[in-house]
Length: 231
Image 1: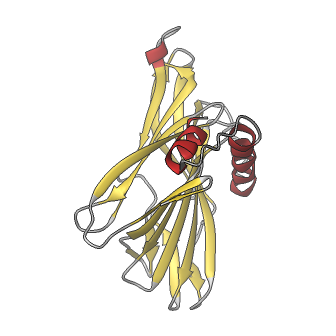
Image 2: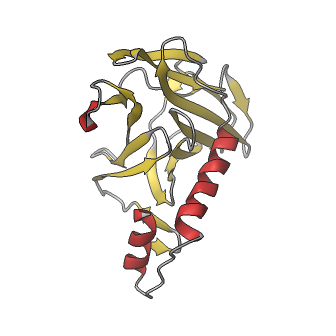
């Protein structure tokens, strides 16, 4: 479904599909894969490209690439058990927003986007409880995801979250936390962990690029929103 400034995909019962969307900041390009697996669970991948971290000098194809996926990715635990998320809706509006239900009385909303001015992407997760539950992640507060080598030295990919302990949520309440996927030279700071500020910057950048100049209004929704996304 097309709305002004966004595309909404509502998942039909029994539907299986895979797609991806590319989003860019000044120092990172993100290709986020999303969809629904055959068993109805969420498919989500995060492939990050860091143009200022080179593997080959003066070569377009020498951009350092980190596929943030696999067992090291933080998984959501409810009462100590890893949960499965079942997508109900995907929204593309310059971010990727994913709304899911679960089998344990919990709803999740994920908002994924690249930082506007840092070597990182963010994932903001809001969980809404229907029952009293205890929420945690299966990864530490800060952890190394991978190492690599390039023209500038050793590159370190990191995972950071502010959900540092188990949190109890009462029925009807919400909890919001963030996860940052970042990369930089070994010994270099990965910057402040400020996902509310990063989301605000992202929305301002989208407005500047897509809404403040060269706005196409043909009356054809598909053409108008394709042009907006292309910018």
